[in-house]
Length: 264
Length: 156
Image 1 (cartoon, each protein chain N blue to C red):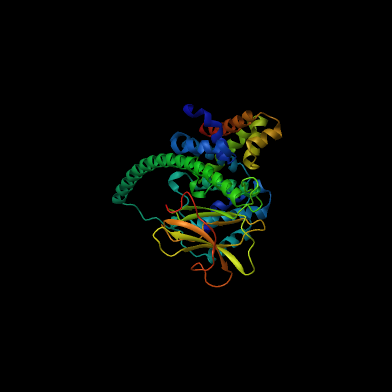
Image 2: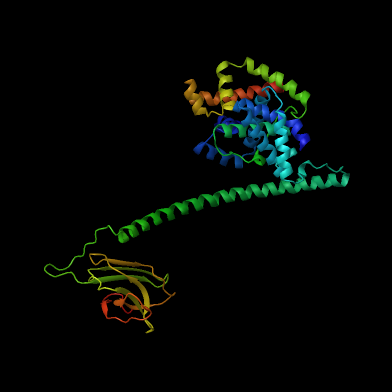
């Protein structure tokens, strides 16, 4: 134990079940690799048994046995460990030694595996922490973008009036799409706006979501269901009847893509 | 199972009763432990210690879990106990008990108190230090040296 003196007191507390937090984790990790401390823990538990045995030994009341026997009768199963043991022969004895040898080999293998698993766990924990941090950052960005209470301020040239605008951010690989619109005119009765993706291969426009702007003309569409891997030539928003089919655009375009990204 | 019960239930019951101070709660611990043995008869591995000692450890831990209203801290099959006298033999057990009781009586009072608070009341070393007004390190060391002195008495 001299090499492990720093764990000596903690081992007794661990045997008592009163070690917690970091101290417990550190000791468990040490126990997994230290046979001498494992043996000491077993001995400390034995010492604790001595304390248990100092209690007076009253017999439990008869009702406790009746209760147990009825519970067992309700759960019939032959407990294998308590079945009578067959007499061992020399051959069986040899088998025992062989089994012991196999167990020793297995134990060595398991100890190695255990140590390798611990390294894997540490590496996974580090990766998990990184991903948590990235996820938190992404969530913050999304929360700001999509919060209906967030202030959305559109800036235009001094003296000019805000015009309807939209920005589509499209990622073909993951068919992810975020669309943000501002200053859209209020919807006429029984009408709705619809976003369209125009494929680069000249195929029919693909519906990318119906939406209604808020009182200030702001709207968002996030990750509408889209087919995989479609390259986009352009995006547009049309005014469509609220009811009926939305498979192809019927109304005129309210806003349409221009400039960088369009046609790529 | 009935034979096992007749032989070992007094140990489990005595430990649970001393800790819980309530016959009903002690009977529940007794029932719980024997039902676990019934459902998982391979939980006790005879190569790793004797059954009386093993059951005494489990009884104490389950009673403390009940006292502190917490989920069981360890699975019963993970508990390995190593103790010198053959606790399965009643005569050996009685002889050992006399020695241990003597050792406890001869122990300095603060040490015995710390041991009993930790074992029978399930108090952590921090709680014991708070109650007794002693330093945390002192309590830790007292518990360990107290246990080691019990071991020495039996080895003598």
